[in-house]
Length: 346
Ligand SMILES: NC(=O)c1ccc[n+]([C@@H]2O[C@H](COP(=O)([O-])OP(=O)(O)OC[C@H]3O[C@@H](n4cnc5c(N)ncnc54)[C@H](OP(=O)(O)O)[C@@H]3O)[C@@H](O)[C@H]2O)c1
Image (cartoon, rainbow, N blue to C red):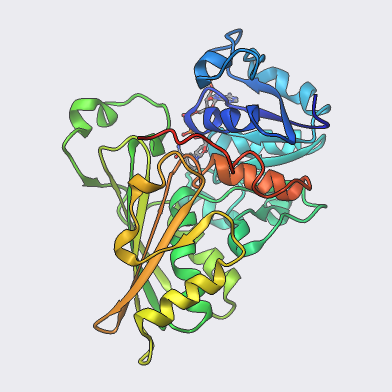
């Protein structure tokens, strides 16, 4: 039995299950409870592909979470943004909360437009820490809620933030294309996500309306004060299970070269255990699927910087990033639970 305990609300969903699988084998943290209404009473191990002695938990109904939160050091919320908003407030009275949703990433005024609801937890929203450790470091000890970044926002910010900070990118706008596998949409069923509609297809969605657009703009500005380019972001759905790639385009300063932009990325991520800088044509979803890594690389062509980042949307885009945040917040080795994962994808 380990001393530091963590619970998960929404462990039947894609990102919650991946997080449960990581925490079940974590050497310093113990997964103490996991919830699902639909699968309440079922053992968790078979759902995660783990031996029974590695994970002995049964899924509990969501309503059990509030009482159980009193006995754990942190809870991960793998729930929709509207649910997380209320749940995080309740649970943060008893413990630390890492929220995978977008409920604590924007300012209150942005919620009706980008998420379709009014924010009803404004003080908590103002105090939440944006947990992108490779750019913003460890959550402060006194924080109660860590907003785990969005999957596209993680990849986009990793690709562009150092280049604006080092003034190699010099634009009043940044154009970002995103491509994601279908697990990015969660376990929901809907005609648009049926096999026949998805297979052999590529389509843009939520053009001009994706909620990660203001998130990218907000945290780029927080990372590089004074820099506030307008963000055009177009996500695309690909017939992959896992994996996400963003390609960002920025105007290059006159003397910017491929060597300089790669050096800027390399210097930025020198101490980041899960960000690897590689030549731009080596950035691919295949190499990060099932891993906690981001691959990033950039080049300069015709006065434009093209910077590309690939992550697994369920790992660095959600669950492994949440574990990185937990590790840093709870005083564990940043790499614990993440440095010896079997790769899930071939
Ligand atoms: N998928 C990704 O790539 C990704 C990446 C980054 C962030 N996220 C964010 O992570 C969150 C979860 O996404 P997902 O894709 O893992 O979703 P998902 O597969 O649709 O799972 C949703 C989870 O929410 C639970 N839930 C439903 N109603 C609930 C309630 N009333 N109280 C508590 N839990 C409830 C479900 O449990 P039941 O078994 O009871 O239905 C299920 O475990 C979302 O906010 C999403 O935006 C997802």
